[in-house]
Amino acid sequence: MLDQLVELVKELIAEVRLLRKEVERRSETGHPANRPLTREEAAEYLGIHKDTLYRWAVEEGRIAYSRLGEGSRASIRFTRSALDDFLEHQRIGTVNQTLARIRKN
Picture 1: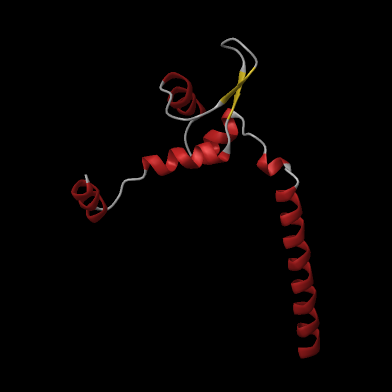
Picture 2: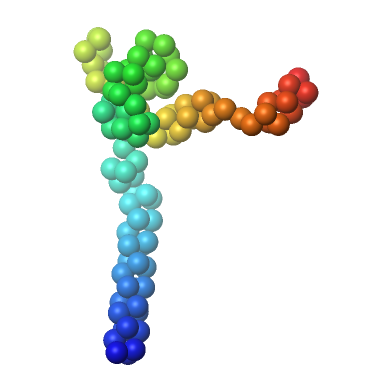
């Protein structure tokens, strides 16, 4: 029984190693995980409604995006880094962080 468990653990370790290599390969080659997100995908990433995302990005200019084509009907795309930057700017610091920032200025 113990031998079977040891063999199973060895197989799992080998599988994890293969998965890690595949993740590394995909991130290096520009796999679709690095592709720009649609409005729906970006909204899901942020946990908001797609209309809210559109308003914040296009109407209010709060989130960077790219327009594919010309005119108001052109598709828009978002990068994860732009969405992460937006989230970071929305972060509310602790009282101590705010006081330190005030003292610094």
